[in-house]
Image 1 (cartoon, rainbow, N blue to C red):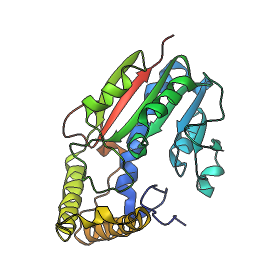
Image 2: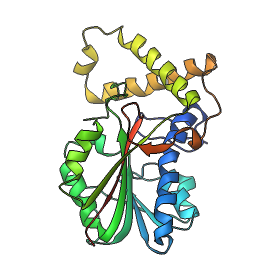
Image 3: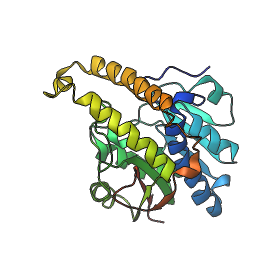
Length: 260
């Protein structure tokens, strides 16, 4: 049975959020293809902020020695896979410097008050010459309504954070097929309609816990409306191609490496 949506994490098997899951899976697919040619299936890979665990479980199924780290337990079905899981704080990971040959961290940095400290931990955890792949929503296309997001970035802003810490930084983006773009455009129209009911921005004055609860419930309402309107097409990860960064990308995707 799929887990109830909390507003922060996606869970494998949640049909209502299957488009969002496909969008996130595109990043994991890209990582698997980008890292495998370098022999990383024989190395150690960390999913830094692995959430419910579906992504790191998929990487483990593709032959990676994959581990997930998050402050919450993964879903039960993910714990039963070949992936290893560690429950810990991102700012105090229980690993020595250089413990991993590669690292992925998807949809994490936007949640953090201290992005610099988070990136420092990533640089420390990767072995010399290692690679990390990060994603975050593109501020230029985001609805800006998620109360879990402390700060969203443009490609230039993210690059400015990454370049002092890594030897190489490649900025890419997660795009959308025409069908996927129609879905997210429809979603954005509904969100903007709802937000017009709060012209004074009173939602920003609500206690954080209440704001997050309301966001989670409204997210479910929005997707049910999209389903009733027939806007939920049978999309999969192929509808979210990764290519050179564009202003209209849904997500930013950065590939970084440490000095050899």
